Image 1: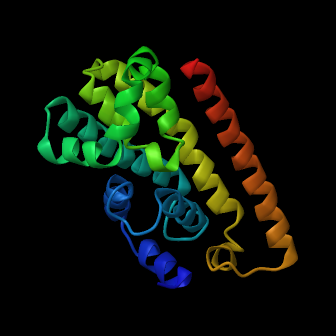
Image 2 (image 1 turned 45 degrees about the vertical axis):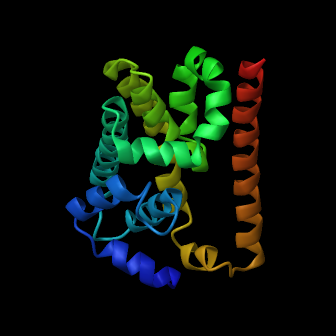
Image 3 (image 1 turned 135 degrees about the vertical axis):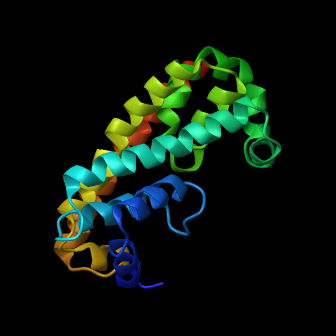
Length: 199
């Protein structure tokens, strides 16, 4: 699907549609959640979506999705537990003692790790972490995570089509290289924290 077509489809959504998209983006949408939020940030600069309304709509959609995963895991839902066992159990179970000791950090930091964001809400429910504690940690991470990607979309809104299609002039390449460098440094910092916590 062309980038412009994706942008047009997302841009045609109502705020309720944006909420549903935010709720489902982590598991159902065929492009990464980060891509969805960058596109929404881009659209926030236009006439259809207001950025001040957009943030709480996205925030409540994503947090509702995380709460749903938490509650299903806490209740021992077969589908959600089966997904965990198929994808993550082999890696997590051997480190479960470490996970239990560092569950607060796992809940917060997993939101920033593309392939592992499911683990925070799931493990919080699976290990029966108090709901208020989970909600506080998850909301704190989302207050950083969502504005970051919305701001990126807003900043690159004049160049988003070429960025998403991999086509651009040298200036765009340089800007993207800087951006990727910053993201890489942030991810390296998070991984170092995880490595220290394992010791």
